[in-house]
Image 1: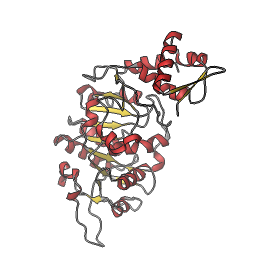
Image 2: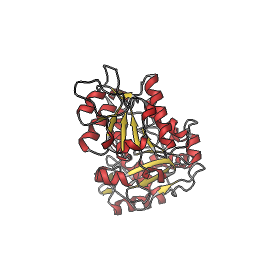
Image 3: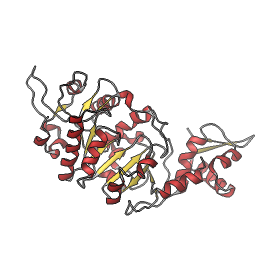
Image 4: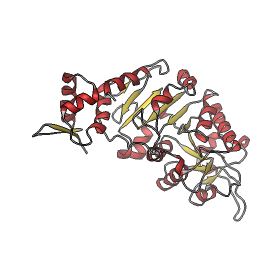
Length: 344
């Protein structure tokens, strides 16, 4: 795909891009992940929402009706309290929680593992984007397809953008379980777990590892109380788990593998294409997009002619950006013959 054409498509769809050095970059990611925070975030919607915090809601893609209803109501409750929902945008629990919040005018942060461009232009998310209550973001190429590796990798960003988390339902293997266990190990945010009668769920195991049961009755929940781990439900030893948030049980295998994140050195100036759904999005810096694409195109040494053919850029523009990339330390120029390779 020509980079020039890709940038045109992204700009038309209202996509923006921010780097770690931009003021719009989410502070929680920097604070919690430091150098492991993604160098670049692509997105659509109001980028300031990335700093809203809130409650991460996670679960299975193949959730049952009760869990989906719970997730939807949890999203609605959060909206009524003015608390953001953070989730992954996948079908099942993620989508239910996000739509429950969106339909009630609440702030929503969707961290996507794939297909950002498609999501940003879909009817499903358009109302939230147009209203300015939804931001969709991804550390992955906007046109990347579903990939299990990317889906697993993005789990940490969901937790790290939030102030607390709720596991509606976790299988005994898979993305939901891995993400929740990583959060417990790293101690990013409190982990609440919905009680369940499902013998195939790992909900109880997550509580045994440091999670907290929350109320099974959605009507007994005050979302603000979930922001603190001090409001956990006491369960006498040997007694059945209380019912918590039943969100989607996301099985590890259900998260697709996506291309690896782009490891791009921090570069100055943000980027964002303004669009009707983003009232004040940052302005697009095409050089930033070129750098991201370069990480993929020049993973191995490539010639100028190869880059000309692959990017569709004018020779003078390409030469100017290659010189700048070399000066910025994100690209290495090799001689005899002249070739270019992305810096490790």
